[in-house]
Image: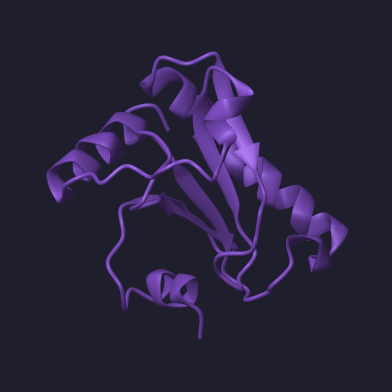
Length: 129
């Protein structure tokens, strides 16, 4: 069972943004920037592109209102999307408020936000979902 499956099952606490029968979205607790959200299928699959076409399409449709909420909640040019898939063997996409391509540079240092700061970020996004 991956760490994401444990988060989805409620075994590990998270800052949930959205959920339906197929997907779960929550804040990255080691974000590149405020508003960094992970969108994860509930079905454990290592590689995003191993998901069937319809399921992959529905994942993007699930992420769309979250991306729009991120854009409203944080000053940015747009919400960027990144799929790396090396950190956790469970397919996922990153949604982040960005102003340049460098904002999606995962080799940069991560923020260390307090639980209170993460809660504020969560509330900012939820106000627009």
